[in-house]
Length: 464
Ligand SMILES: *Cc1c(COP(=O)(O)O)cnc(C)c1O
Image (tube, rainbow, N blue to C red):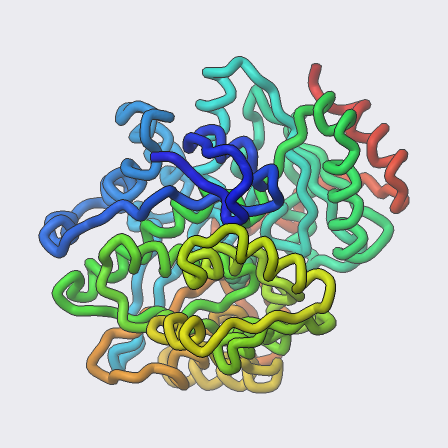
């Protein structure tokens, strides 16, 4: 399997090269040259497999020659051994054909672990083979940073530096990063906002001399290997709920469009999916797009579902590439206009094609809290605010009551305890493996928002 860029100009790469490259050199995102195909009989034959075995079957065609079957198996076994349950993504019945797929049983209590835990051993394997060391740098508004740290902690060929906005992440989120005592893990409390962190990160990557000297790498949500790991649980849920004979629908609380794009990939691979319903908070650029065919930037509004507080959904470019019939030049032109004017529109046919599968709905914080309270009363399930947005959107946009609806629960309620307690009257306890989080020692590294200071911080700590 080879990978091509959504902007059509970067070199065609293999899976391991795409993993290390992250963004394509033409500014595009890598996608598979063609979608692996699973017939109905192929999918039916996957019924009853364990999560790890299913993951191996789904991921194998994407890997090509980059890993042997034994290597992939070892990577997946390690990745999912760090989950609270071997099911990895347990599914709960909420009644009325609604199901909650809990994706938060990994080390940091958010769905990002499902992909990041795969990335950790995958990076280690690929780097060991090449005898290379990388320096992963990332900016986080909360969930990504801790998931990335947990995935690569203690690994020989990797140093990780995570920038977070000082005072602007929750206590749980900060402690999940600052209490990790490993020589290859470095956190930075930047004096600034999340946007400042992202700008600082961009500046590091734009300094080519520094980038090459440090062998900088990124694990943000555009990394193709993350999408691959997320495709698995769409198959997992469908197989548990009558698929492939019975189509299913998914409701996905969405920010960067990475999670729900994996659902789109599953559909393109042959999994019968009826609907992919996007849930937005007040930052509703995607829902507006699926309503109108126009993508228009707006300011970012802080909400109680902060992992969806984004202005532009970077992974959307992958869908655009497909809607444009894989015309990279057209994607490039559209996105450059988008950068200049803050908006672009697709034509009626393109919108109709997108709407065959996608729909979206938007909810503000008041509606989200009401849904948390109501669901707790109705079923005893305590939802985090992101998952509640997904449930609301799924309920509102579900077209067919006979089609099972799977709502992706993307975070454990204890990750957002204040909003959850406020909404339900119930304080969500941390799971046992994290019960002592507030007793662990924190190591905080405050840093001015200054590029030179950041570079020296990294240079002083990175392993030779
Ligand atoms: C990152 C995140 C999301 C958004 O996922 P995308 O792939 O960016 O759409 C939703 N919920 C939680 C809890 C997250 O951490």
